[in-house]
Length: 222
Image 1 (spheres, helix red, strand yellow):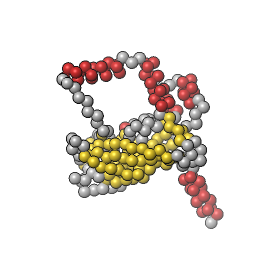
Image 2 (spheres, rainbow, N blue to C red):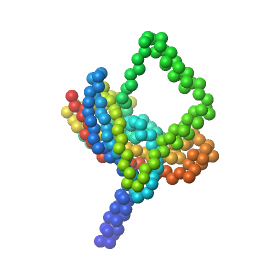
Image 3 (cartoon, helix red, strand yellow):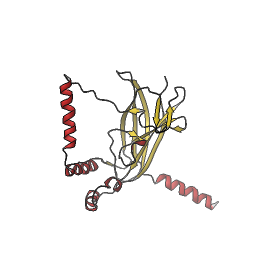
Image 4 (tube, rainbow, N blue to C red):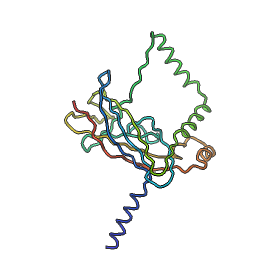
């Protein structure tokens, strides 16, 4: 009996030791002007501890879980019933339309963006990476809740492919969405020198770990 009590105690302590919880509150569905289906995902991140915490996470949007493990952005994972659908191209972000008076103006714009990226020096790129790292540090007080919103859009295409694996989103089956956050620190600084890493991490105690939300149904029916 005492071993059972000890095991239950250990499980309880482990469950309570996670300082962060992520939860999807709801998903609102609407139709865009182009006829695509838009999902507004309302979710929250909670500091469950009694201490101030900080972590590195870009909260401007969410990305497919297959987009890369070293990106400090919340991931979403899609399920058909209990089966994960490992395709990154099902949803897109909310597109912002740009309007040009003619084709020449459009090309001038795209050329200027290309030149801006191409002409950056290695020092400028490294400086921007440092700035992004620091700007993405989130700070939360004890028991604080961050209420967040993300938007993904579906063009109603049901057939998708990931390498040799084909997927078809069945209109009569149930689909669910789940969110994940992978909090990292040193892993995000792999292309920095040791001195740069020490400087960026100086006096910082950053929470790390993988955290998963609840599953919420998402409407992919006809």
